[in-house]
Image (cartoon, rainbow, N blue to C red; front, side, top):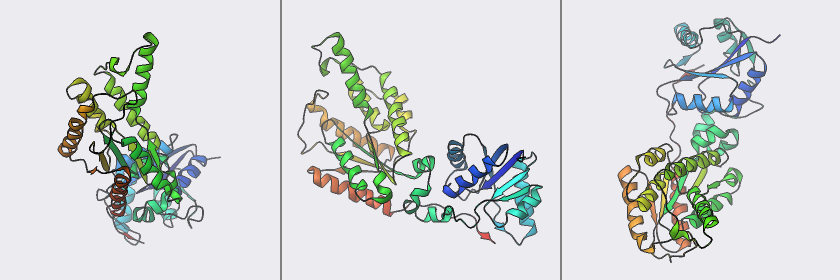
Length: 358
């Protein structure tokens, strides 16, 4: 007979394949499972973020978090008791089985009044650790599941005025990193939903009037939050499948500028959606030196300098990191690659966890 209530606990800083193997093994070995995220306030990934990552990967488990600012020392009775008190306060109900991959598992299980179940203590199934992931996420990318990839991938946004090569640049940048192979081969490029939406609006108008053109399309302020929200959804979906870099052909922040361009003012609703996702680098495609090409969904070439200026002003005002790309396409791609490579080289900057004395 399976134990009624099982417990898995750890820092999950960040969660990796070994953690997921432990949780799935535990879930199969008990009637109901609690996963406890033990978070120290010195750690730089918020507890709520780690809880959400694990909950998404393991929807049938109960995932909760607790603050544990006590370092580990297996030779100190007071330290042992402090940890046990924290765990029992977070999970007060009876624990029938404790599932761990740690040498201290049997002693902790005894103190919790539970049976210990050892799972891959020698890390033979998944040779990875939180320490290794924090040191080099890209090198350990294959050990990360979708939610964690989405949280750690470097998100790059290409944006700019109409017909400034934004889409061409975004697709070329993603292709550049895919060509590096390995985990980089999974690099995704998020398409611009606003263009898809615009195409649908024009087709709908042409069904009523076959002679209608893009100049006849009129937008309302209510449409832009829908576009921004869908752009975020597409980005989040691709972020769970990409490599260490995700390239976005525009984002919800840029949608706010397009609202201003078409309707003459800002939209607080769009701006709040634009602030929902964080991005690591913006690549602003300058209009200078790029001929205007009317593809049936473009107009008002004279507004390109204004739009470039508005993008730059809002990037500055909101403190978003950006690089302005100028010159021919090949030069712009070189500038973009250099900026992204510098971002990757800078690392992910995880705070050190509390010391462990084993």
